Image 1 (cartoon, rainbow, N blue to C red):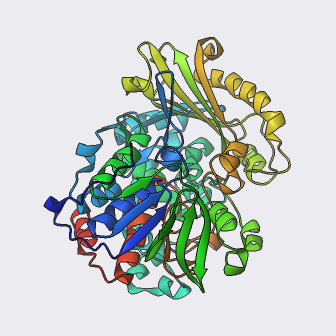
Image 2 (cartoon, rainbow, N blue to C red; image 1 turned 90 degrees about the horizontal axis):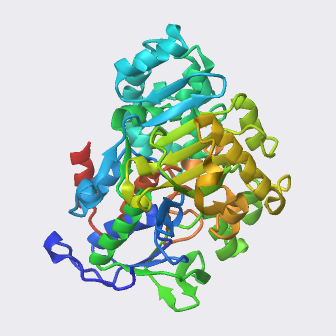
Image 3 (cartoon, rainbow, N blue to C red; image 1 turned 45 degrees about the horizontal axis):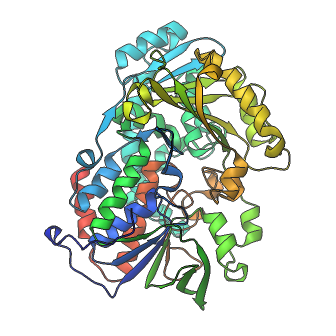
Length: 523
């Protein structure tokens, strides 16, 4: 599977430009989205993937009849990927059927209280009234403000940033009054909600970026807005199915996907990347797209002498996101009363965040997330069973935590903590178990420091201060994924593919009207 190239679909009006060769490193969501767009433009595209399956962190873990998403389980803001599919003549919802969840998730607070979060504003006000009557109506005000904010910030999220001068482009000026660089996301939400639990209810989404809401810039208040405005979706088969279908479509367009082919070395001529080597073959190209984890791939593949701004030493000094401790549990029986998504907030949430980001120790009272997707999608487990996904945010790799010592103990703590959402009998029900620690993220999945959300999204590492989509250190190299602009999270990773594909094609003199036209229709 994913090894036999097909022919470019002539019905889509694609002209072959076989002399324009592009090699993509990594079959993650950004790399696959780029492959589709570049192939549609007529490029000869090859994707090199070190694993035995596509998807990267959005791949599937399958065993004993159970299927789990390895990484992302929330599918948000489908507009971006829908436009990318439309640009190559496809319909996302036809290709990957999805269900909009309602409730979109359940939030429980160790301090007391619960929200079954829904796009129904009247229902949300009824639930908010039980927690904090004074905050009734605040969510509507937040939604109205962030609807305007997103509209103003879309040009920032959809444009490349190569220098500080890009910040003063006329198209960005309307966003300036909404940009409060010294205000954190947590502080921003405190402008709307008095109850600290409600502040967290609409700020915890900073964890999609691997950050504390009290360190994350206020720009990202749009994250929870996207959930309530555009929905939380479940693709049939999981988020991994989106990547698998993208790979199938890419191959039907002529893309060659080479699995189990890690890049082992490179050939440079001055600043220009000319050739990639694997244990199987050598690959020359006019342009290269890197979808691998940025810091890990650069430090392991590109000679340090060829990188000045992003040298090994400078990368080591950057700020990185948190990591995650993962349990994938095949469960006998169905937890029918447990929603598709559940997030439990620790009693002392700010302490838990400090332990992750500052002290780099394991918490005795962590927050956690559980996906019980089998209540929505019976294809994920054998009859009468459930596929349960458990995620605990933890520090990225740090000398303070030795996972060879801590893994078993933290697994027991995690299972104990699941009682907070009613899973008191889970140990007796486990029929399959898989575990991923930060050590595994680093050494098995090739993620720098095991920081699953890449470079942190602080003000010193955003926009032009992030690795550029047209990579500034090497000619002919373009970046997609969470390590470049706009950042982490599936919607913006897909957007990075669109930005970088447009830059690459423009540099090759290839028309990109199909990208612009689909985006204009989607807008």
